[in-house]
Structure formats: C-alpha cells, structure tokens
Image 1 (cartoon, rainbow, N blue to C red):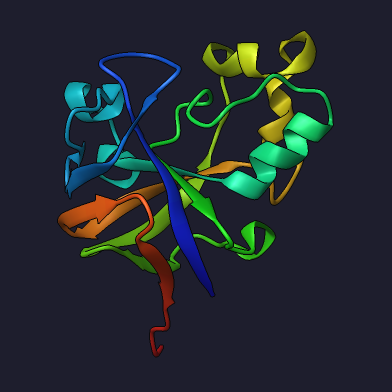
Image 2 (image 1 turned 135 degrees about the vertical axis):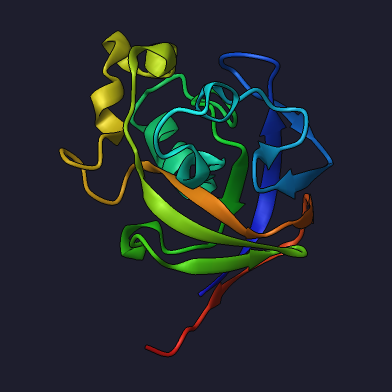
Length: 158
C-alpha cells in the first residue's frame, strides 16, 4: 500500500490545524503542534503522538455537504492514496524518514463539530462508521516528514 503526504498540519491549540511544508516527528509528537495527551502525559499518550487522516475521506465528506477542510478535524498528516478502509491497529508506515505504527482509530469529539453538518461528528466514529475515522499513531522511528513524501506500508513478518 502506497500513498503520499498531502498536508502536514499543526496548531498551538485546538482546531483547525494549519499547514506547514515539513515537520520533525518525535516520539512526543509533531514539532510545533500542541497535543494535550502528550503535554499532560495522560494514559496512552505514546500511542496518540500523531493523528492521520485521508484526503479522499475528506473529499467524500465534502461531497456529502460537510464543511470539512484539511486540518479542520485536527489531523497532523493528511494522506492521499492509501486504502483507508483497510487500516488496522499495528500496521506500520514509513513516511519520509519516520516510521509510525497505527495505535487506534481516533474517537471524534465536539471540538471537530464545526466540520460537519449539524455538528454530526459521529460521521467519523469508527464504531459507527468503520473505515471513516482518523487514526492515531505512535512514533517508532523519529525523523522528518515533508509534503509530497511517499507513504509506504511496512510489511512485517509474524
């Protein structure tokens, strides 16, 4: 499975997140981005270092009439060309010089409500709409990511 980085998005707090051309990705998250789980060291923060979303899913939601935009749901990296419905926890991806491992689908909350008609953010709830959620990932290998970098699934032997 192969894709490309469409956008890298950061914010000093909340949504939307705004695009940058490149970013350093560290175990604690994306440099320049505020992450409450990381900053407050909440349980499971390591697995919530980076949030990923699909450009195709954003475009599909726009066609449904939702006012969603890249970065408006808080994703750090917007990816194009990956079969989003096939993603599972534990999958690893190389992006630029970074290796990420999918931790869990990202549960939506009211803070992203403005991206949806009638604030229906449950539209991207994995439990209700499998294959539509954002994904949280832990950083396996730190490095740099830039817009246009290739996204490759890493096949691991079991």
